[in-house]
Length: 282
Image (cartoon, rainbow, N blue to C red):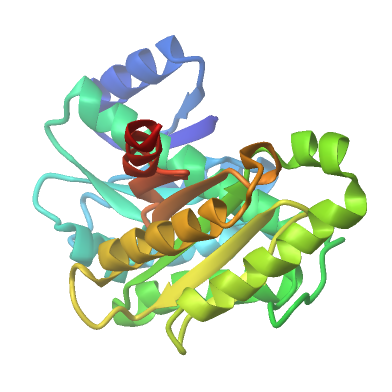
């Protein structure tokens, strides 16, 4: 990633630059905020880490960064702070907080989240060749909801998550079963997804073999985890309906929290439990 660090503390700058450069990231350090704003105007950074000091509030600095942005995809903003909570950082307009003093693991986790969210943002922003399908919205419409969910987290602290589903053996099914049969499998898969979502959830087809389910404003803390567990169980049964396992879809499900980009859970279909059950039956 291309990372800009805005911080007056030379030790922080040195630590971040050394650790991230060693991981292959390109790091630019700018202690002066006005100079940093000029750099942002002319360069599309992937991630901007900022300590608002000597200001007590981060929001004015964040607004200043927003005003300098020219691209359609906003960079991941990471607040550098000794005291701010995740909730305070998000309401200030940043994606997350990196607490000082930080460890190597802290930096790796937060930059990993940044990479994940930026990959998602660029995928959704890329050329839209996928439209509404089987009761699902198209990629462009899903992108607008994704951007709106992030904006509402900044404005109101609302929590949103996305379950990304990818048919990992799509190419193999195309080669073995042909385009018509594979598309019919996708039609059946979309029917299952429509059945397993809440009424307030929004499903989008994001590519030939990948989908997203936006979980808006969960009612209780564990609801997203309950949802991905339920999805996995339903899709396990869908997989089991295929007489020939080589023609059944294999699916990866990733639960990602917005606006942090944290991967909360990862599931696979057929699940490990299903494979163990099938092995026992044999």
